[in-house]
Image (cartoon, rainbow, N blue to C red; front, side, top):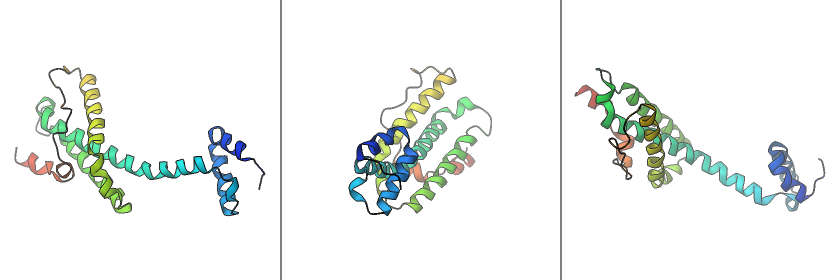
Length: 165
């Protein structure tokens, strides 16, 4: 294994992350704990844990965005099948979310606590969608507080609603 100082290893973190990771791995494997770049390693471990929660928040944001479109913009889409793409998107995001939550059960408790963050992301996407489709942002103001509950986001059956129209 190549010899490297702690300072060089810390610098390597920003310059060549894969090499940094490889060297830290070797140091840990060889039990050379005093040479490990602990500060950056701990940050990376924290980021790894956060990555899965961030994915869940993103899927939840998609669900909220498309629930809102279903409730507020279906008539603008027109036609008998208006909103079907939103229904499919909600269902697909729920499936992906359920997969992650099955793989990482601890996130089941954390995700509801991030509900407002998901709504913030959904609001941003809704605003972009309105602008891209030349809708008047004043006429279609999106509420700051989410109009849905976590349970509704995860369980509301839009296909059933579609069939009752």
